[in-house]
Length: 392
Length: 183
Image (tube, rainbow over the protein chains, first blue to last red):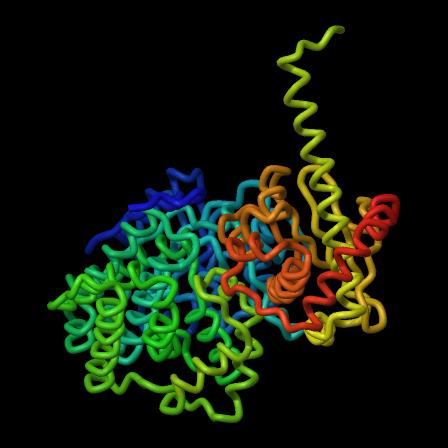
């Protein structure tokens, strides 16, 4: 194993994982010196009864809730983050408690930045590693097993006035605590379970071969892949298995830790662009693009991708990196094929509703994505378009 | 009060590094300006940059910096003072002079520097990626092939006219550099 010339790794998030993790929330608030939390969530999570599971744990405790903000849309914006800040102040809160998926968690991160810095708007905070100081206490309860946002230092929020996406990357964006309780993901339908699971697999695979890979991110990446390969198909078949749900939540978290350090590459750059232009859910786009992106990087990263083969359950290895890497890619294709048969997860961009006419716009958007710089192989507009045509 | 050699040497080394970084940043600025006038590749890359877009590249905490501005269809180097850099809408700032020198002296590529968290970005990440691509074009012309091999993800291929342009840049960079350092 080669140690990189230089790398940075951070995961300051306390992880509380288990079948009875939720009741620990008030205690964790106490450890952070907080007494009153604002729950940030969305309508879907609220209607699924998941917010009640969280609010219920405050019964009989000194720590309390200052309110529930459930207006977070799927693609959140600076305006929504500003409303969260208002609700936080009006409720006399001293802690944010995000209960939801990627959009909810990113909104809470954005609100926390505004609260912690006192900035007037998010525009003045966008960028990489420019944030300074300590943010208010922040606890996350994920309700999907895919984004890994509960352990990442990044957030993406739309700017309503400029109609652009603002990206924030900073060590101060890490939540303080992540609570993983399988009760929060039990009701996820098979299709979303499959898409979010493939999102986590993409995080882990890209983390393992992208530019800032390091021994620490590698350890989390392969552990995540092992868990995902064991539990993803069974949990899509039968989502009521709490043990598998907990395993998936841990896999997504570990993949999140891995990619937060080693970052992701062309697959994510393309998936973000597919989402922005054609509104394809992020996990679905990643599932489609993962084998193509891995294959694209084989010339530069054959040994690393080959090393994933046994974790992706390739049984017969040749010892020849390019062939074993190709077998790893085939294993991913077999997995997406199984998921397609089980729940209809799209296998091509066309099946996901992307039109051929959108591909050039997607390619142009993708090469401006920050993830493109972290890919081992160079990716220009023509390369991006070629990959999209293959995945179409 | 007398200063011992042990105290003096690190200070002198630091000042020397800052001097090298300042010269390299000006060379970068000269490259942006020159190539925006003469390279079709650079002209295509910056065609969509809005009028007045400013990009500053520098060294934290108070090190040298260079600011580039899009004006008309070309790029102009505004100079190396903090006044211009602080007002830039996009700033790429190396965390320290050692990190800056790794990139500015061609030991690692800009994409590696970003991956290794060696620089901060103030502003839109998409614009930082566009600036990164433009910087890759400058690097392609500024650094010799032997260095490009180790710092680029794909070795650039030069046409005859591009090789000629590279030679022209090398020929004019001395006077441009002298002008840039005093700008």
